[in-house]
Amino acid sequence: MSSELERRLEAMLAEAPEPDPGAGEEALHRAVRALRPVATPRRGLRTAALVFAAAVVLLVIAAGSLAAAGALHVSFGAKAKPRPATTQLVLPQGANGIAAVVDGRLSVVTSDGFRLQGLPVSAAALSPHALFVAAGIGNSLVAMAPDGRRAFSHPAGGRVVAIAWAPDGFRIAYVVHAGRRFVLRAIYGNGTHDVVVDRSVRPVRPSWRADSLAFAYVGGGGKAVVYDLRHEKHGVLGSAAPVTGLAFAPVSEALVVATPGSVFLGKKKVATGEVEAIGWFHGRPAAALERGVTFPLVRTFGSNGRPSEAFSVPGRVVGLTGGLVVTWTQDKVLAGWRTKSVSTLLKVRPATSVDDVAIG
Amino acid sequence: MLFRRYWRDAWRAAFAITGRRSLADDVAADGFERAFAALGRFDERRPFGPWLHRIVANRALDLLRAERRLSDEELPDTPDSAPSHAAGDRSLLVAVADLSLERRIVVVLRYGVGMTPKQIAEALDLPVGTVNSRLARALEQLRESLEVEHVE
Image (cartoon, rainbow over all chains, first blue to last red; front, side, top):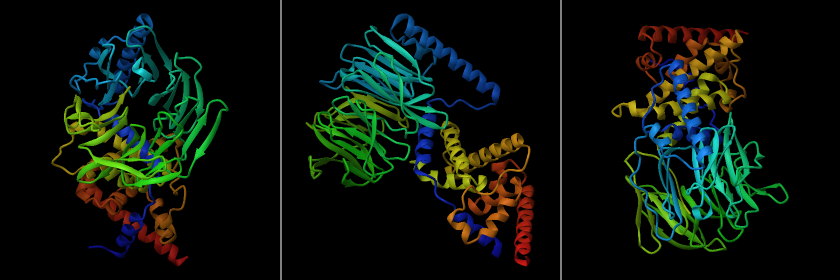
């Protein structure tokens, strides 16, 4: 039995306002980060305190190891008793290194023979030529030299959620979750000269321009912003929002921008559809568009924004990088498709979360 | 994807309970974070929505109660900005905001989220009779508030 009052209540509550897109992005980030191989039951403050204390001890061990030896001790991962999320990571032909974050754990393989598997991180990025790996560990930005030559651990003031290493290797731009905000910072590649670039940004990985003198990021309002390091100037690019991805061209100043439903080359809209990934594919701007039940479509565009070529790939596209399309099927991460020489980069358990894959 | 499917509803439920955007952002995000962290314990044979709403509702309650303890006074229940629907039924919105936290949450879960009294009882860990009596008293209070306003 429904009274007039009950009908009014239902109508009123059905017309509640909509959430802000930014709140959704932050919530999504937090939710995905919460997807852990082994969920820790919440049993009150005592358990939380014990977990926190254990985490602090592990971080101290990790930081101490890095500082003392200048190299990463893989035993750090063993102390945390990680459940292996992946099988062995395979370096694609011609690449210097590959880094993958699966279920919040970093695996790295470089052409120098360095291997790392199972390090809990919040974000990671390879330096040019995969000479270094930068990762968010606890509330620090940590740089690891695969051969043990150098490393630094820099307190970031919060969880590092996105990292981008400049093409010249001299600087790193990174986004920190500090309190209720995301702060964009930039630091020299040796761990010094850390500066705040913007105190309110979205948790999207910045993208460096090819000359390493500027990088693009997503401002707090959801629009693409280009920061010029020489003049220390911020310039808003276009009105597309909320921007979910950015990718500067590897050799020019062209920038591809993605929103949830569109792809832009600079300010020009070049494609519409649910965007899975953007990047550059053999020198052309490219976007992977979701197509519902069928395989996603990878489109490339000319410099004028006109469609150039299109092809389907299986799974979900997680990256367009280094001339490769990287896709994630149910239990594999694959790369290839330009020359039909598809290779398996790693195998993952079903229902794991492939957070990031970078090839350098 | 679970998040895309349920985020809007979870946020709207959080907003309906807390009446404030900033709190709704926190509550809904925290609800998802907790739900995703506990996915391993979720019974896949049961629907995800009610389980998530339960987490969101309890989180909202915890937060509002903690806030009330801190301020030692009644909450600033009035929504922080007049939502678009308020113009159409502002008197009802104000009346709902005047309900006690315990009554307001059962009203929101019943009429905003669409949960049955039994589901609400499970979500809030209350006897079904208590939920029904809170609903009845809440409706009675709302009717009285609207009648008083009508007379005035």
